[in-house]
Image (cartoon, helix red, strand yellow):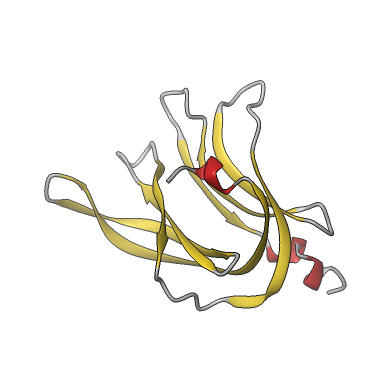
Amino acid sequence: MQLDDLVGEHVLSGVDFMKRKENTWGEHFEDCEVVNFVLDGVTYTAIQDPSDGYRSSMKEIMVSDTQISNSFPEQRVIATMRPNSQYYDNEILDLTDAVTGKVVLSVGTENTDDYYPYWVADFDPKNMAINADR
């Protein structure tokens, strides 16, 4: 599965982060950050590839059966691929709240065309409509 498979309008109802050991090469296991999120009732898991300590990226995204500990009422979001900037090529999915117009969740890899790409996994719940008056 690719990030751009998720482009479109969805409902977001849960996001949480965890660390887990991933086989990065051979039989070498490292702690990797994992973000789980629920769109339209389906849980997606994006996993970090820590590379070598200086570089990192998104290793993969997949449908999973991971139980989400941080759930909330459904929020309408628009999923888009972040455009490249003057300085960075991106492969980042941004989930923007359909009411507030603010980015709630970003996941992927920034600076993909450079020697030092980096993993992006940012959740900003204050940008959701249900938290707008808080």
